[in-house]
Length: 360
Image (cartoon, rainbow, N blue to C red; front, side, top):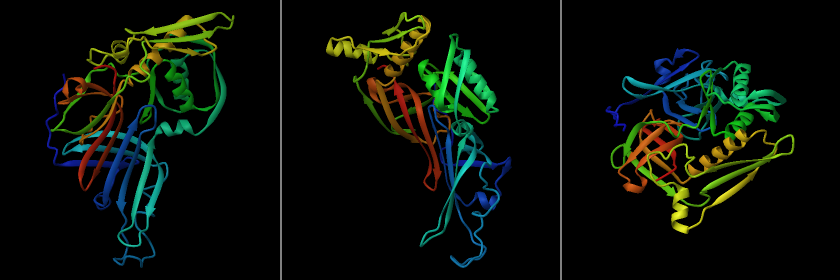
């Protein structure tokens, strides 16, 4: 099991480069806040806020506001943000500037917030109507990656479809739809498009303990919507009914737990909860079973959800598995991170996160 990383938590640091150039010292020291957020199947977003100086010391009497008019902060500028401690900095995001937000207050010093996103945002900017003929989902994702000048990092999928239609959808919307059918995830890091299997079965990379590095945690265990069986029904082009079934035992991972939500429902209420999903057309038995397992596992991962706050931890990122300790038998264990938010400001470095777990 993972251990806690030994580090000096009292000296958080960040490093920002724009278009390959490190910010000048005078500019970097005026940054009062750095924030980064990643979330499953969404663009990574970042923001940093700069105190705006004047050419003259007077608050209002200046012909020019430095920084706000600076050529450093241009739309589309390539930004790399590293966060961590002392000489242990981690690259959080490589993205592009998409927004500038100055604030001109009645009192106090003006500020400029620079916002941006990973290149994932580029996949949203155009809707397309087109077919993909005799291709698998992984081949479709690879084609879209190359169209967007992104390097594909893709887990292979076997099923090929006679045709798949992109119906006036952005590339992100279309890929997310395809990914959801097979329990895959879509994200972009720098110039790489990832189309990968759900990562809840991965090994834990970091441990947090309540009362130490874990400041707070609020979980919710619910049997609502937990299912013992998912049935997907559809028809092929010959109008033959195809049925795919996923049931207890088809969990991708119990995340180190013993009892799933489906087992808890049967034990507590004496019923086997089922759901039938009609999706037409379905082209093969394999496709129906793949869809059923994807839906079953998505529901199973909603058995326990939670949100927490910890001392700034750059390793804690979406798509990774962490271990939470000191929460009792039921809520201690492995969790899958679905969102992380990292903030450095005058108060220090904090990480907030959202997680899921499929069993106790």
